[in-house]
Length: 463
Image (cartoon, rainbow, N blue to C red):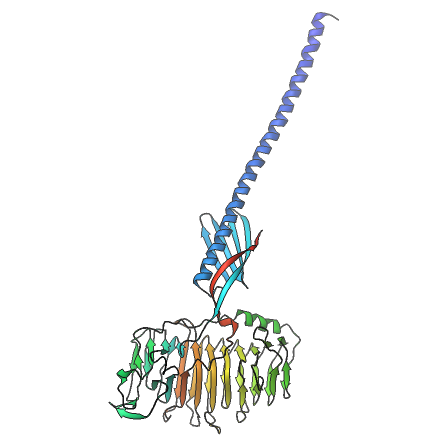
């Protein structure tokens, strides 16, 4: 082979080699670009994940702060924007769940809390956002008059004027004589502090009307916040009752309730019988959960002796002595009643250290003037998220006595208390007494407020 031909052959080979090398480098370069781009995307995604995590952690800390500032956190805390991201937190059954979102990437933190709770006490006789008036025939007593004569027994925390025509007095009181056109204990002047205090936050304060007006205006409020009531748990149980087979029982023979829930999807009538329980602990009461209304006529709810750990929850109205008001209804010690709708208490209802709670209106009305004095006698707790009415304004009205603590609503806009008597109502037709001893020892758990909370880090989970 000639030298020239050999050189030509080698040049062709070199070209092929060069072309191969260029192709390999092109492929490698493209691969490196792809790898670099993936790395950059991965780094960016990790940065977004970290930012989402920090937002979720921020949500946990925010919720914990709110839990220690405001005891009534329940459900979702509104979504909060921070920088270019957001966090949203929910709180339920001592579990905080916070979701942080940044650039479409979400991280979630779930952690339990350790709570310190204390029962929400009823430390004022009558709490209401708006009073229409305390009319003639109404007497409100301070049952701690001998030991705490300056206790505010009426707290009108709304923006209305509190007009007092009836009496607001301390107990125990002694003989009454006339002085300065008003009734005073033993002829003493009002300045002796024998009259209980009333406080009104808004309007023109307190307006005393007529010669029968009694009381002392408090310069400051009682210092106690009205108890709040979280009905979420009870409402959920009522919803569950609606999933059971439909029935509308009419109980006319003794019923014994065991601890735990008994569900009825329908309406329940308890007529002329007893409902008792084998439950012995407030932490595991017998709960009768009814999706519809509950009518209780001429019956006894609770055990004859000892505490009666019975709770009756209703999606519809609860009415005591709906039709047979000539027979007495007895609500025994530590029984509790909750209606997602209204509660009506009629003549010949007797309550002893029990609780009656309504998400809507609560009405106490005497209109049939049955035999017995008083015609309605209630000792315990009355609570309504809306309106409480005491009515003794029909021509045949009897008398109403209540001892314990009463609250209508827990903000200035929703709670109202109406007291109605007829034109000829004698003094004491309606008597309301602030009494600690009349309150049940086992308040509904929904009144427990969180006094402090901390995170249980052993339960910390990240998603």
